[in-house]
Length: 184
Figure: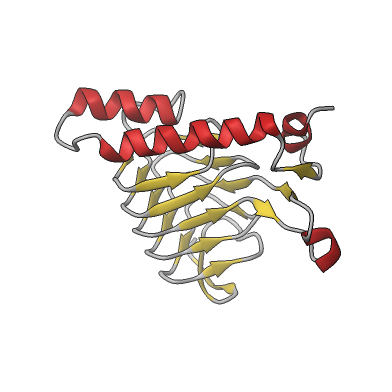
């Protein structure tokens, strides 16, 4: 099994592997190209964003600057809005449902580094998918940790750090984020 296959399967993988390193370099090139694209040139913006995030709906909007590792591991639904300064470390995959909005500087982290210091001496990690449902709102500066699912129609307050799943129809806040109340 290649290191890329291990990454896609959710296993421990060597992120310094030549094939993966080239994937990351290509991701950085596409990020740089997108971030250099004039925001008022709609055709160039759509082309650069489509090259970075294949299959992105025309109704989705990502405000520059935007940062990610790969781009092709990101799935955005219709009318998703990602504000400026957001960072998606997307090795494990990021899925965001329709009409969800992310405030500025949100950070979605799918990689999980080993806890044991001896293991951390090697260039290995695992990655876990982040899933954010439909019609959600994440305030500015929210951090979402590896493997988290945020249910449909939920709101996460600005500055929160989400380390556990948030059920649908919830208002969550804090570090770590906890459900403060149900919305329905």
